[in-house]
Image (cartoon, rainbow, N blue to C red):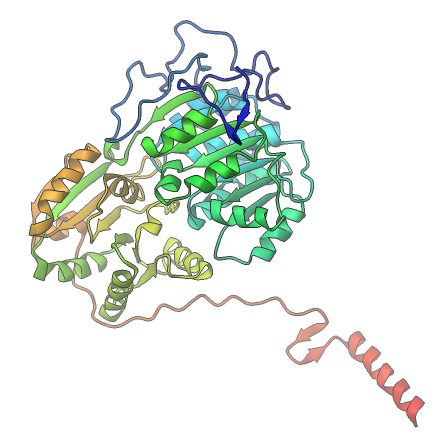
Amino acid sequence: MNRTRTNDRFARTRNGSADSGKGGGRFGPSASSRSGGPSRSGGPSRFGGHSRRPAAVQGEFALPKTITPALPAVEDFAGLDMPGALLAELGAQGVTVPFPIQAATLPNSLAGRDVLGRGRTGSGKTLAFGLALLARTAGQRAEAGQPLGLILVPTRELAQQVTDALAPYARSVKLRLATVVGGMPIGRQMSALRGGAEVVVATPGRLSDIIDRGGCRLNHVSVTVLDEADQMADMGFMPQVTALLDQVRPEGQRMLFSATLDRNVDLLVRRYLSDPVVHSVDPSAGAVTTMEHHVLHVHGADKHTATTQIAARDGRVIMFLDTKHAVDGLTEHLLNSGVRAAALHGGKSQPQRTRTLAQFKTGHVNVLVATNVAARGIHVDNLDLVVNVDPPTDHKDYLHRGGRTARAGESGSVVTLVTPHQRRGMTRLMAAAGIVPQTTQVRTGEEALHRITGAQAPTGIPVVITAPVVERPKKRGATSRGRRRPAVAARRASVRQSTAGATA
């Protein structure tokens, strides 16, 4: 069945079947074989080799049936049909064994198949879609303002993380990346697009603005990725996302990756994915065996002190609160108590947010106090504790907050502070998330709080977090402040003498 436009939308069937003539390109098969090769009896199921479908998180829709069997997963990157430069860069980066979602999806995405992938944050989704996009775009050059590949993400932080993760691989195959997000100068981003970026990593709002200004066209985009699609739907980006998807090449490849797949994503799957290969790996943070979940029952009067003592622990921690005002208030209190803390929320400018994340990742700041803006798109190595100072109101928010720890096989703990009137709601939330937490009654100063979180008394000596000093490059024509190069000074002296002689 071929894709056709109906009222500027792609008419999609319920089961996602569509034409098999999509793909092509350097690494894609012919139109007749684009669906991924001949059928294989005894091959892996559409869930990455598992014969049984994993339990879905509450609210998720029924995953579509795959018409064409998936290609089998690979055991190493060498078994993939990728450019040699990409394989060499994987080795240079020390990436030798693919994560499950990479091993399962890459054989199919490299062959041009649409992909619907579910994997918790930290499971390797970025390289799962990024390597396929780069491999299928390698060897092509984009014209001004007409990218060839598009990655849509919900937040600025995730856009920057995706760009940083893919940059060395893009350089290895001589592809240019451009990051298009709000909170940064739009003129600079339009200039990068005019320079001919092959791949654009963008948030929907800013990319729509640039398109409206005539700075970008998507009609040459043949590979499109939606990362964390459910969050884009939750944030109200669905109209912008569908409008952007309607502008890319209708016969192009689409890949949709997310940590959860709920009914908000159903529209995107049915309308834009054609006979997708479906893989579900590590469906939620609650299924990670290296992650512990603790619910700490605290009395309201004791909660503030407990939070302060947890923040004063040895090691880094992310603390989540509901509002920007609460984040700023706790951060100020922690700094006055001697804890190196910094705030991250949507009210901060993008340079402030970028600087705060850099300080947290380098250890200049030990405590990141944040709203849900930090729940996705932030990767910090060796982060072993996440604290919900304010319990989340949605089980998906809980899973994504918790996904900041226990990443890539590491261990970690998620601690939620619950006052008496919040206990019933937290019980319902945990059940919706499929988690059975360890519940403990704690008081400040008691052994249980220290054992679970590492809490300790703060120093009480106020601290001030200063931005790192960045030495600016010297201006051309200057050897030191206030001194010009001898040659420049001599030329200007000669001009002054000639002028004086002419007017004498």
